[in-house]
Image 1 (cartoon, rainbow over the protein chains, first blue to last red):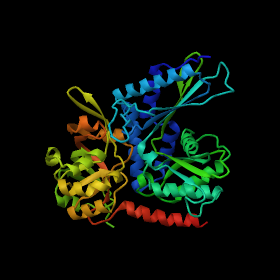
Image 2: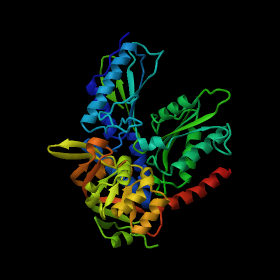
Image 3: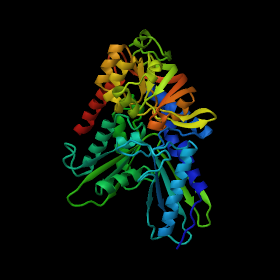
Image 4: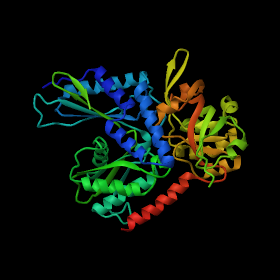
Length: 295
Length: 198
């Protein structure tokens, strides 16, 4: 069954929103953090908040690294023809956003270093399709976008326990040690204060992907089974005193989000995706009659 | 410890005395020439130092930045231009500072021992700009004077010669060897030991 897909102009709108406007929950968390900070931390957060105002007002990229555009499509199960059409619509929207200066051309040949110039390369943009077996004819199509910057991506980490981190075993305390270690090693690179997405379990590929998906969760969402643990982890990381941009003080993270995947009996991976303060994520909801809303 | 919380105005190019007087923790507003240079530009400056950029770099600052730039009439419009991670240039930076007579470097995250010793030797500084603040930092660019290696390197890696006014930054590595990054690393290392003892 074919589904109603968003037009190219709507995908361009979604990308533009993500590049120029921070999600309200992150903006709120930054404002709160700025209100109680001092010294370099206050200076950095002040600059960040001014930057967000200018970017939204002038509709320019809040960060020049507009990242790898990642799209997560769900809500409905799309058939093969719809998937092909939507993927090609997304690629077209990405190159048109590069042409209009909303995105930087970020697809580079890995060995020659040659930039394709239009934001398109093998594996870029990324589009993930989730099946929705419970969806009905009136279920909306949901498209989450994440513009994932290179600096934050570079400081993500994956630990195979035990072994990769002395003292960390296959339990909650081991996970805690991994998160603290990753935040310590990052030293604010990946532009703190941001969000840490954590996946416990899975394999090397699925664990990292699931960790990245945790960044899509709102900071103020209804906590899942790990709500208390997430709060404990954020408090521990903030005790490090690394601070905004690694220049000391508070906070180092705005939040930590944790999820799990089943694991192989022999494996225990803790995968950590780092989201910068400019974790640019928005959701487009497409109703079956084609109306689009952005949340 | 004599920390200067009012910003010091620094010109680019400037004298050795001007950067030597700065201390880690000082806030500065930089006005003048800023030349963007990322990985490809640094490799080129070391492997085949080009006279094209020699004059403009003398006593000036390089900026670790890959901007978003659009053609605008006959010129250019910089849409967004925050700093990128400086540590990637560590293998090249000390040689570039010496070869081109830089007064310093603008970036984010700080740099390593080789750069620190080149800064000590040349009386230079490392200036930390707020990562991700591409829109507000681009608003401090008053002119795109020119661009080098655009065809060869692409927009983010090209060397954009910019004129900035009141570009805000924090001195995080100074010419006496002091480093905010080392201080934070040491303090957070102590805090981590306490956290992991539990």
